[in-house]
Image 1 (cartoon, helix red, strand yellow):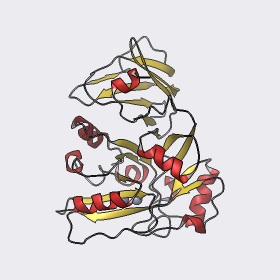
Image 2: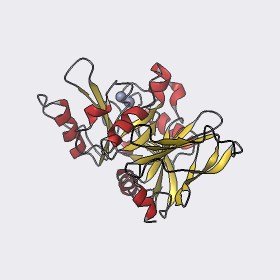
Image 3: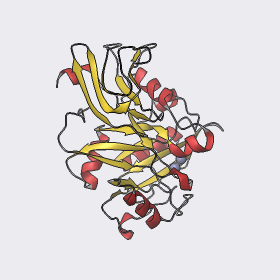
Image 4: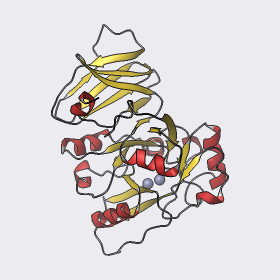
Length: 299
Ligand SMILES: [Zn+2]
Ligand SMILES: [Zn+2]
């Protein structure tokens, strides 16, 4: 992946999973766009359930609206019900009703520019069930509505399960928006040269972003002592490797004055995907996308 912290361009903030009254969201499409424009967002995807909400019908302010839809597919048993967010799609894709859920999702992914799994923890989907999915770029590591409704908003375990199996996978934070109190709590910050739909989708597809519910990630860099992380003021940081027990945190570090804006974490493993998390004083979190050490070494 291109390291977004070393890439040219600027940081653009947006939410890629949002319902309106065209499905089961709390605000009409225009009110939803107005709300995110007032929050200072740069881009937004309206993802009504199995219904395409047309961006061109709306006053977009300075937001870039990405054409999108959320698709649901029942699985092979009562416990499997898979939702995916499909971006860069201008109609609801049709699939074979007799196809397996894995084949249907691969079909959705093939018809979208970017496709990711929504709320795996809420769906109680094990990461191992997602391994075979073709064309899927990532999963939601955080979903505000799922956290608010059922306490199942964070899907780090499913994410690491995929990374442990060497399956590259980006992590998205989103609002989803089924309640009035859901707007503006989970987003991604994308490093992009431009605000166009095409540039944003290309940057998202290649993982040039990080996810957050509050903190800003400012830099990730390899030094002689480990991975140096710069962020907005945080009280904890972690460098996690996709191997059992492979992780380093600042939890026991007495040399740090908290909150800190810069910290170097020793490398827990050289063989697997690594990712960084930081937590601020309010318990809000940011997640880098996974990277290989050699990708940082090359920069
Ligand atoms: Zn959903
Ligand atoms: Zn949704």
